[in-house]
Length: 413
Ligand code: FAD
Image (tube, rainbow, N blue to C red; front, side):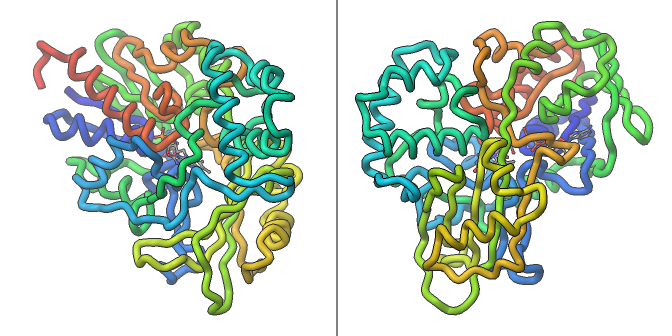
């Protein structure tokens, strides 16, 4: 079969790699001039490989089995970061990481008794008075940062998803940068990825589809849409997508988050660390890279629209970098060379990732991933419990390749 994959992020590339390997003709069309999508690794100080930072996805978490397999297949390996994504020293309130973990266990126990779609505020109402207030403030801040949304918009699922753990399980990322995985997957395809080509419209039937781009059109037996849902819901589909899918696209929450990277200066020894600003809704870390030494960089991730406004990310890195310097007085920061990365204003992302917001239902979840005629849907937002994560994107790519294999049984290869 001839298959067009729209989007060369982890989801699209995983689908393309799996389909290409079993002998299909695969054409990947990508709007940007690079592969990787929301995985984007760059040298903070050009020419200095010790300063490679992740402007998008960074942490490889527990249970990333598909990523682990494909990283190995591509001849790459994970580099330990010397710190844990799961344990952050809370600052700005009178509490500590152990108290936050204890509070989280109570919150999780209450949340799992409720439907995952129940508002998170119902969980909060049940635990108030039962847990330490400062620890709860730190926990809520962390959940808001991770989901990039205020507590009022979260559901009970936010208290128990795969990111909510508190054991000091060590974190890793791909040595040399997570984007290397995208580059390696693309290099293994029979046909080079068609970068710089923007898909505008998809015409489809049960048997075939036509993808119209700013350069022309491509006919295919199957199409894999592996673009963010923010992009999908603006594309023209002829005929239109089923109303159940459009409702699910409209109901999904889209996280607001940004990253800040600040070079460290001087030769002071720096230890790996993770520190959270509870009131300002961002966290910071220093970590090792493939060399085993701590990178000369402070990394920061902030989440929720109000937090980003307070950090004035729209105006650049200055406000946030100064706040980070106040939060981390033990580090010497080169504030002039700070770089901020936002995603809501990126036309090919229009946000960070999907989170289940209030009003969300399980039928929305299945509508996101279900195929329509010759068109299949991949992407982190279609990955259920793994939504919002690199692992989810990769798993969704595998899922659609299996869907296509089954749908094409009986047809010539
Ligand atoms: P994308 O990577 O967005 O790929 C979609 C592709 O489609 C893009 O390349 C885009 O350019 C292309 N495209 C869009 N529109 C068009 C069009 N019209 N025509 C052609 N191509 C188009 N995950 C983790 O596991 N750990 C983390 O620590 C983590 N941190 C994150 C931090 C940030 C700031 C961000 C933004 C994300 C983070 N994530 C993290 C999430 C992770 O990046 C995503 O879940 C994953 O990369 C999504 O992959 P995808 O293939 O679904 O989408």
